[in-house]
Every structure is written in C-alpha cells, then in structure tokens.
Image 1 (cartoon, one colour):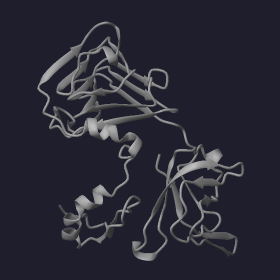
Image 2 (cartoon, helix red, strand yellow):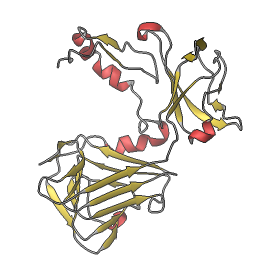
Image 3 (tube, helix red, strand yellow):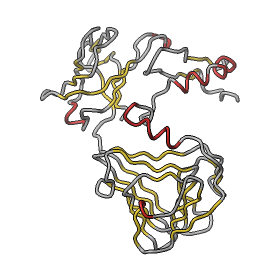
Length: 283
C-alpha cells in the first residue's frame, strides 16, 4: 500500500471509546498499517450501536453462496414470502416487484425487476438487507425511500463475487445492455453540519449553533460529532446523541462536554472570519 504523493497527511478522528493514535504523515505508512485494526474498530458506524447491534450479529461474514434462487412469480411478492436464504444468490427476475416488508439476509442479490422499500412497506422500526453484493441489472429498479424509520444495506464479507462489479459491491451494472436504475433516499436535511455560535464549556450539555437545529431537520436520536480544535490533529473529537431541540434551535445532548471549545469572530474590512469547531450530524 502506498499513499499518493499529493496527500500530505491522512487523519482519522475517533469519536467513540478510548482515543487512539490516528494522525499520520505520508512517510508513516508502517505505523498506519500496524494500527489499522485499532483505527477501524474505533471508527464510527451507525449500524454498530447498541440498538442496531443485531444487524452486525446477523449479517457479518457467512459462507460463499453457490445456489441461485430465481424469483419469477408472482408479479408482486413480499420479502417475507421469498425462499432466499443466507447462502443463496437471490435473483429478482424481470417483471417481478419485490416489496421489502421484512429484513433479508442472502448470500447475494441481483435485481432485474423492481425492489420497493419505503416507510409503508417497512413494518418494523429497523430493517435491513444483507448480501455479499447487491446489484441492479437489465431494466431493474431499486428504489429505497425511507425517511421516518431506520434502514440498512449491509454488504457481507462472504466471498461472493459479481461478474461485473466484483466483491462487496452495491450498485448497478449495465455491461449487458439495459438501463438499471438505483435510487436510495433517506430523511432530507437542509444541512448536515454547522458551527458553534457560542463557546461550549466543559460540563455543558447544550449546543448553540450558527444554524437552527429544527430548521436543519435534525431530531432527537441523531448522533452528533464535534471536531477537535487543537493544532496538528492533536485533539480528540466528541460524540453525542440529541435528546431535545429547543424552540430557539439550541440542541440538548445526552451527556456533558468533556472539554472546552472556544470560538472567535474576527472582522477584517468587510469580511468576518470565524474560528469555531464543526458540529456534524452523523445520522
């Protein structure tokens, strides 16, 4: 593995658990590789939370799928009705509409027909589909519009290899002609990040941002991260969960800040410079 010459540094910020060394210069390839597993284990993933841990438990790994199962009738079929298992390559044939009313764990999935997944079809608060690859082919349509619930597409590490997109792929493949269509939409947000508008003191659990949290579309249960402010990436980020959004747009989080964050506004001529940490919505 080599770093491209135009990268002066590779920086990973750890928001969860104990801090780990995660800032490297281009010549630190050996140290980066030796610490790679710790960096990945400390990285944020929405699926790797207590409420979603069953997704990881059910979907990780698996055996190489060898059996193809074609879904070619009826015209409309529910996910809870199809005979695809964790070691099958599940093929939704042209002319068939698969309605995602439950979670699916398959060896891999090819969609040549239609897949419909939205807040109405999804019956549970959390739903997922897991496969070594999930690929749309031919005239297939994969439409996933989930705004009010939690939905996951998890690509398993089971050795499955698609002839076009190869291993651990999620996408569309038009190599053999056709016009495959893939669309994934979640809850719309006006903004996914903002800046602190007032200092955040150690021990405080109320964040005041430059943008109104309500108008940005943020909500209780969203996970936030605040970037570090120290030079040369020597500081550590923090993660929070939104508990409440106040009428003025301020955000109440689930635990107090472990450190102080100062901000500075400087006016130079007719320009305003802002020194403030980024607050990012991880959900």
